[in-house]
Length: 458
Figure (cartoon, rainbow, N blue to C red):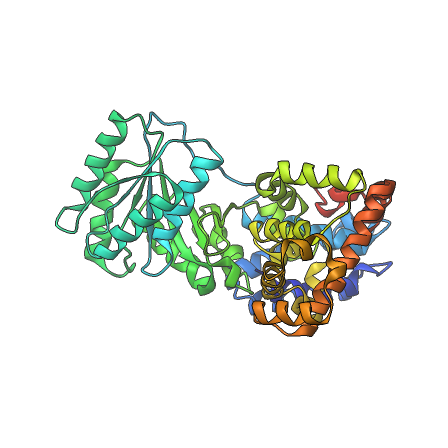
């Protein structure tokens, strides 16, 4: 997400960051470039105008001219205003109501609403430790009811049955009654996708809203529709008292116009980002972290949280102990590391959150392609236990067998063995007290002030 905007802003802000003195002329020139970058990212024009106006007002003031490093202060101002446009801080769901807390999900057809219901159910169950019930009130598309039932089984939350022969209000009321009797904390109600211009459908969801009186009404919208996402959310907000927005398909959106426009145009916060197809690919929206990513500063906090949540701590401790005792690092360990990486959304997802990765060359991005990691796993799967434990035995005939078994070429097997040898050397260094040295090197890569330096103005 934001690749195009990050690249364009990165070049523009790099030019000004080294300037010893900022004048009205070079500020105007930079702001012109920033304005073009935002418009190309499909950010709504009123948002661009207000954003540029506020940055200009602060940049031409004493805040910059009296600074020792005016270029860096200018970037801090841009970041602070990006955060302000997107909503200052993450706004959590209001679940403090008398159980069950009812969450109504609304949105256009094809925005990913039913999938988002399942993702939110998984999020509430796993991270908020809530007992969740889901129900579909989409009586126009029987397949949607079946889809939600299948997804509910996958995420292990209870599904309340409904059918196309029932009325949406009757379905929702029966689900609320069941949730109350069975002591559910949260009830997620999926609704039929509709168009903002469809008066009959809008009237129906208004009546449904009035009948169930939800604590949260979330509008699910496709990020790839750019500023249209914000305009559609505004139209829905005029019909329904929305409490927040779920922005889906952000992993396919290189522009980011929706994320920067929604809050300003609707006045409603983005509460979650859908970042992939898997049922755990939903993240709370943190404006300050997203602003850091847009400016190429990474999002180390989200990466740390993801590692905490998704890395198998027992396996990690076992591997650390093994390396520490000098028992070495074999190809089975290497395979487990690849699996852990995939659980965290793959290499590109991790690299997106590291500082400076927005400026990676296309060649580096190609090398970090997750397809290569799948290929590496397939190669290791084609090896015998002995070969995984003692890679030195893998010579000519064994290489040919492994390549044939994994559907790859001998040069792919050679490349994997070379990468494994490099990682093995790194593990040896870490076991010999090199971990501290490695951490010192990583700190050297951080912006001034350590990880906190990535979030200026906080």
